Image 1: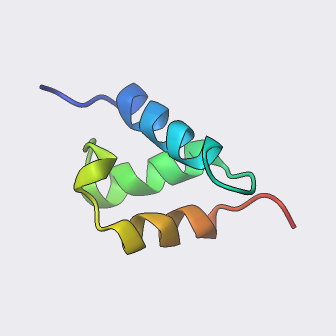
Image 2: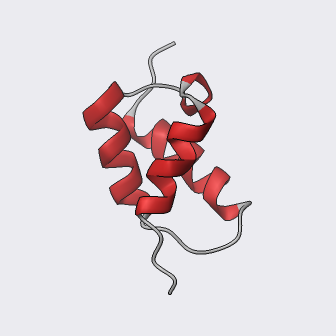
Length: 60
């Protein structure tokens, strides 16, 4: 199955919606795709994924 940018965005939005805080989902998706390509986020290292998410927190 081919993963698209839209798929990655949906996965990131689902993960961040289920967590506390607000995040720049598009920036997270761009960073993931720049570093790993269009991949299922479940294949990423858990800690690395959440570190990327944390860098794009929009709530202060």
